[in-house]
Image 1: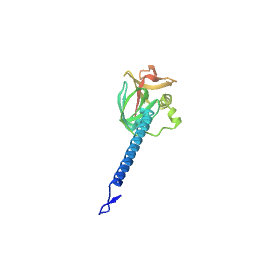
Image 2: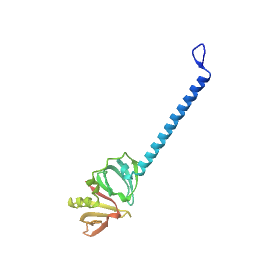
Image 3: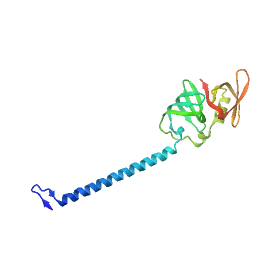
Image 4: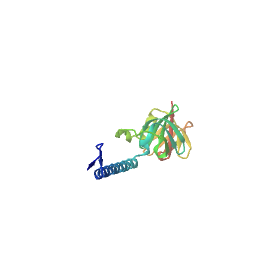
Length: 180
């Protein structure tokens, strides 16, 4: 090893130091690339397991087949329905009728198992027991107004002001709105 008058190393030793530094930097860069690829893979796996209902934020706008846009504060998300407080009304939105969500929000903690199982039959029984007036919008855009008379496994009977009853199938529901 040659030392200059200022104490610096010259020649082969300096070249080896540079070579080893470059090799170490290249290994560090490869580690970062590998880490980034792993993070991307894990994020992609998590996204693949995420449902749109996991992304419904506290304030949201739902695009609903047959009913247009429902915007407001989300009070609950269940597999069968989303409960939204919108402009002085409670709106139950059928999950099967949701076309889009904006803006997506942070993931919410999952509801308790018992609460997750509460779906249309439980909601309809509550509306029937409280004798609440409802406006039902079906996925074809038609509306039915009245009070809940009977609740079935896959349908509800709504009696209108004229006294006429209509059976509505849960699969046809878009929204159910109640007013304060």
